[in-house]
Amino acid sequence: MRFTIDEIQEEHRKVKSGVDFPKYIKAIKEKGVVDYIVYVSDGRAVYFDQDGQNVSTGSKYETLTIAAELNLNEFVSRLKLHQQGGTDYLTFCNDCARNGVEGWKIDLEKMTCSYFDKAENEILVELIPTV
Image (cartoon, rainbow, N blue to C red; front, top):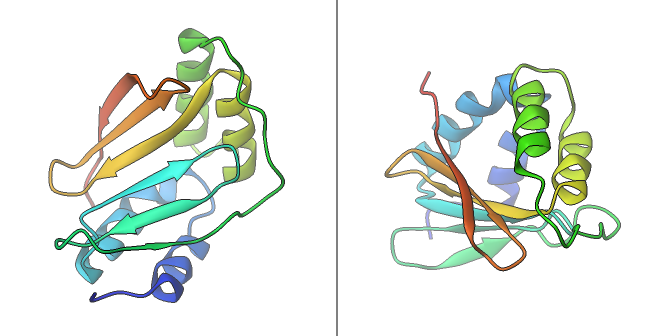
């Protein structure tokens, strides 16, 4: 494995809002991350390399309850606000939970972010902007 969880977390600490996200993606891609999954319920992220090996952050905050019903319109509204720098990371995670979003998967080869609900249904796929 070319990267450590400490290296990934150091890059993540530089992210203050959604505006910083493309730089973060570029940095971890250069370290060898090919994809990762974030779970909103506890903030845990699992990072994978090209051989399928992975490292995990463990829980980052107290457990959030994910709403049983997806509210896609409200989620998209809150996502846009976050991407424009209007909310911090924890606020965004709370917004996800309230609107039924279980997490997201980042694919650094396709440069996509796929959000999913409690049943792991893909509910929204976005292209990740490059820097």
